[in-house]
Image (cartoon, rainbow, N blue to C red; front, side):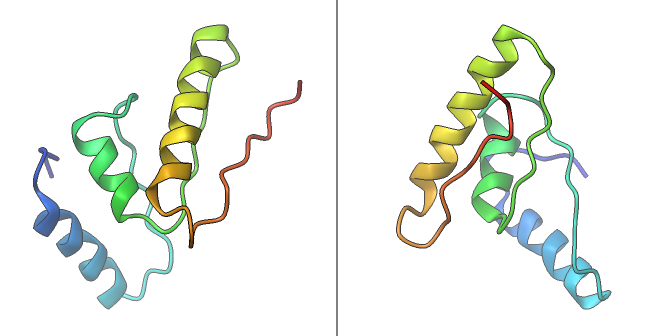
Length: 86
């Protein structure tokens, strides 16, 4: 399925289909960055796993992603954490 901005119904259909099929976990691999499909899928998700490469630019991207996740639902979402060591 092609993910395009504004395709909320398509994302909801994917999650509904998975739920109806009995899946408890759905893993969606999205392009890096907070644009288009990635932002929409993050907004539709209850949990997020963000794999990263060990390099300075990836760390910068990770911090932007953590900031974005913390802004989604500040009252109900647990604060995003990084497992990266200092």
